[in-house]
Amino acid sequence: MARYKHIDMSPRLLPVDLQAQLVPGSFAHAVHHLVDQLDLTAFDARYRNDEAGAPAHAPAMLLKAVLLAYSQGMVSSRSIERACRDNVLFIALTGDAKPHFTTLADFVSRSREAIAAVFAQVLTLLDGEGLIGRQMFAIDGVKLPSNASKHRSGTRAEFLAQARKMERAATTMLERHQANDAGAAEDVRDAKAAARLERLTREATKIRQWLADHPEDRPGSRGKVRKSNRTDNESAKLATDKGVIQGYCGVAVVDDKHQVIVEASAHGTSAEQELLLPVLDACAGQRTTATLITADAGYHSEANLEALAERGIDALIADNAMRRRDERFAEQDKHLAKPDPLHDKTRQPTKPRLFGSADFIIAPDQSHATCPAGKRLHRNGKDCTIGGYAAIKFRAPEAACQGCPLRTKCLRKPQTTRSRQVAVLTRKAEPTHSQRMRERIDSAWGREEYGRRFATVEPVFGNVRANKRLNRFTLRGQAKVDGQWKLFALVHNIEKWANYRKAA
Picture 1 (cartoon, rainbow, N blue to C red):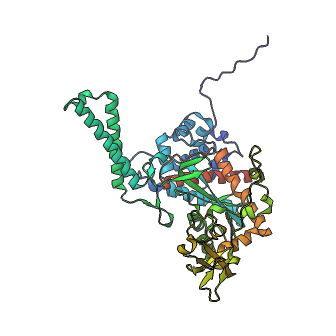
Picture 2 (picture 1 turned 90 degrees about the vertical axis):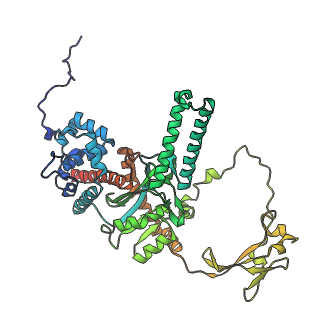
Picture 3 (picture 1 turned 45 degrees about the vertical axis):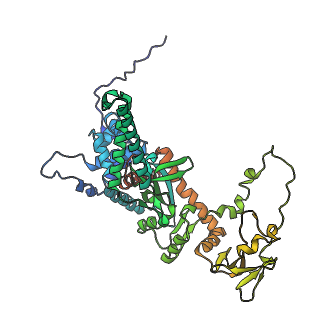
């Protein structure tokens, strides 16, 4: 039988050159040399140990460890600590410093402004290498859960109702025990009931304290109230294809030349329309007057398009009906439109034709209209716009329609509709910003340019979510989550720089 040399995997002291573990062309090698070129004095403001106190871990070392960990899908500070203690690559990059997990967590959560400064320096370096083209910026966002419970969301009124319900339940339990044994409730209650009573009292006290600390509801869009959250009040409930989550929307502005992220920010709102202008303001230093901005239908609104026109920003913002107007997607719903093969194939009766606007006689002065039954309809409200045309509306009095013999030929739902309303088109209306955008994005040039958006921004989120395994934010608070999102964007950009240098 053949014999082989024994392979000993037990720990031992070995002469290892830590510098040699950082192989040229790897991400660790790129991070090591890139971070050493950056100005990290922005981190110094967090330390007050110039004359007293123990020496602190170098920010460069902590930044290298966090970036390397994020590139490998390690987000937890405890997992990063274990890697710095056991993984040779992390030991080489940190110089065997072995930072504690609390140090790493504090570094990530409290360094947002310094991380933003590093992000800007890396962009300057990438621009110097020619990796930013500024021909087209694609904007999109990804909704991720954060370290918050969606079951603790609600308005102040809902929280107050919860506290009162808990207090009533606790009072009822206490009164029941006191009734069973006059005045000796403590002896009668079992351990489970005592624990439940304590839990209800504690939760009600927490809610009352939260309400005292937050005297007002969070303002939402259009004067509505945005639900608060008692674990992270800056997060929001976000609707995703996998259900509703409690978290943040991470927005990225990506350059189309090499998919470099030129702006990254996290926001606690599900209304992407609110984010377009702030994101454009944040990346104003990176774009030029010739830069084309592209975004999906989530960022489309008449107010946003008007603001873009006033600022002279060239943009292609899709609307919800863009694909339905595109003949390339004409058959996308053909399978959904097919009837159930087991459905009743009995010929359905055709619906009778109802009176249209052409059947109504409009007065010369447009003050009223006359219906086919000879009843007068009065002008209703101001002019409106229908399908790009100005129109005037007329409505009949309820008394005129109640006993009308033509009611079934005039109303779609004669059982419930009180009176008939009709709109008459008068003239071509002034096109809105949304109509101009639709014409622009439906052109051959617009479709080609907007089609580049998918290939620009979607692979970035695929890299961050799939390759880097970012499936949730681990922090609470918009500032902390924003810093963590910028770190992942920084990992993506450094990879671009490393791959470009390796290819060159």
